Picture 1: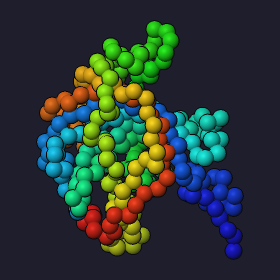
Picture 2: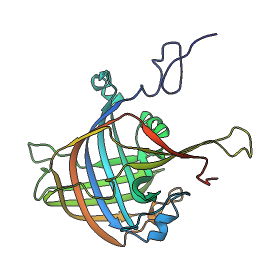
Picture 3: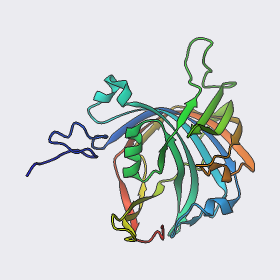
Length: 269
């Protein structure tokens, strides 16, 4: 019998072909965030049992553009940048479970396959998309500065349709990078049974977050956000009723696993 190795598929004798390496995973990146309020009923539609709406500001939503560089503990990916660099746009709401408030990613698009694989393990509902955001550089006229007056844009498309576009104009330093994405994540890990009608072979509610976090000075300011209809996406249902604000921050995160909160209780189909 052959021994096959690898944290993720494909598993081989050496494990070298695995789509992602073993955690911990390290991330460095720039985050462009717009927070807004929508109808709480639209948020509730995206929360499977036993999750419920957050007690405070239940209609608050954050849409976050991220330009990431990531690696494993060996850091070998950093010298082969196609394996380390990717972009994503994700949508976060808040929810409650057993009296505790969590953040939850309800939609997320990425532009690399290894990011999708990591999301499968972490419970992020990742799909392929086209994501772009204005980059900050300290020199020249072709980039804004992270400071007063800095203006940044972000766009998201999937299946050839634009889904979202945003502009953030920085005004002043901020103590936080917003509040919606400020809690541990409550995510589901689902896998249908291979037998028709067999329900879910994997049905877990898990919590995870950064093992460690560091960040530069966060900035806040005014924001504009537009969402667009698509035949294959439902982001526009979280329509923008009121803009809360926009934020920009450079961050570093280490991810190394999570905690099982419950199993077999989601009621998902």
